[in-house]
Length: 589
Image (cartoon, rainbow, N blue to C red; front, side, top):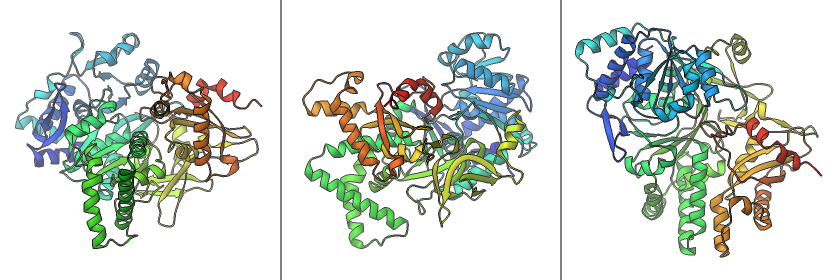
């Protein structure tokens, strides 16, 4: 089996002067780094690590936003047989200290002074070698020289000779999970895990060397690392780095990507915006849009082999392409072929709506422990409400209690320095116990129904998974974020962060002054409007599953308050702890 740096080096030799990376260096325009330049930079960075005394097995931590140095440091660390410890930029100083200490990291590469500042006091007493990407101070070695690195043939041959000596089961990374249900765990990742998973994903999806990815999810998360870095470079595609999560749409218009990896939260916001635009259209435009949606849905069904497509349909398709689809696409990227969504289930209504206007959404499922992809929908086999079929490097089975089990070469060897947890998570037959609940249909499509640890049991003994309820509620234009609660209680309630845009719109339509959000959520008419929408969206659920009470919150769940993971998943235990008085008040008769 070829190793990750070997596979990427093949593309470096093949693509040479073609762009590999696009990044803003001057804050104004995107500039490119060619595959040949990338090769020079990787070889020089690898030599630099050796010159600094690092060797095989050493742990090297990295905290940085997405930029070209991230993959370069990663590949250089791999190339000397060392182990990368990627850290989220949003981590607290206590968390960083715990991870650096637990991993035994010898060095810490950090992006800039802004990221370093909160951790300075902690690092002084840790005795770890500190390096920066941007120039911070004279006493901290930096990598500002790296972009212009040059190498000769001898250095390249030495580099290639050394990387071929490594073993496919060499550990390349210790990834600390984001910990939605408990303390972060150090997941061991090897070349074999990544290579088998990446090529299996490439066989499942149409990813070509002519593609351009827009990367904005944190590279420290395994989903973006494989789907937005390894997979593109394995096929010789291009990667452009967004300036920030808030500038994704603007950057997409500038760089015109063909593929964007995303999480449901971003697609939910896009859905809300499109729904708001639809509501504000004139009757004629609204009718045109709805006809376009119906035609788009028919086209999608045709791609799945479930509907005929006549010459008349093709004519309508061209007409709506000009009048509707193209305009929507140009608001994101005229070249966009697909969104790849992961990290959490997407509400079926949202996926169906986006596909009906020809925004191709591909859902998948995975975990850090599976490097990470387990299942993927495919363009020709894209079943709404599911996360697709198992990719060909792993098997998936549902246990007697409904838990999703996975076995394959993409599955981790275990948790770093935690043999007990490893034994609990991977059974003697090699099945990894995901902790997720799900079901497989007759065609082997997987549906996620919840998480074992999140399963609520009411005082009446009813088992309820919060995920389907929350997905249904998130389709409401009134709801920005939601978390349902009710474990041990006699009914289900919800904490709801309302949409500021919808509230502002409500007041403007009535020619009223827009109040602060804290005052708006106390308005009885607003509460009643939200209640009506909740009642409508709870209709498909059993009576014992339906949300009976709710409280509107003035402040959104956030990463800064440790209520969201870096991929925007709700940390249920944290949100519940922060709002325990509010929750208890909903159960006082």
